[in-house]
Image (cartoon, rainbow, N blue to C red):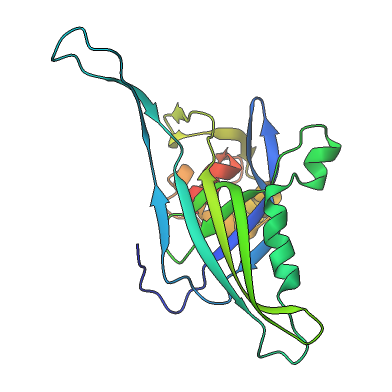
Length: 233
């Protein structure tokens, strides 16, 4: 599907996987990969599962077994020809490493690759993991360094834990509560919880705050999981 936007750059945010019981959620940002050029398009797909049994009767219907996670495929065009000594090798390495476990997850004994958040302007972010990366290098310097390449990135939606209903904040997965103290702001709370102050909107939405800049000391805020926060921010 083609998107008509020329100003906001698409980006892929690599986040540290955080284990919560039997699943992983997006933690603090590890690296932000901003597109040099916005993609001309990207594709998304969703499949359904069916169990086709031998029919005993002519009108017997197949059994629906559920849906598979969404996938998203996008191309990143890399070009460093405007830099006298530039190349795109480091960016290529960063993309290829998205399919490898992070150092922190390996050291903890639960290897898991970074959780990726693909976003572009006001479109709903796609939260998932990278299934594969393929690169085609098309232009080189005299010493062999690539200065132009096209990288195809295939992502699969991350399955999160089922959302819990909360009468105060609506349906979302709340990880914990925070009691407001003197000097708190939504930005400071978001920075402490998610590693970035830009997630303050997610806290405001989750708690249905009419005035997010007027916080009452002693009031309790419910903090959504990192994955839910990314989707709401």
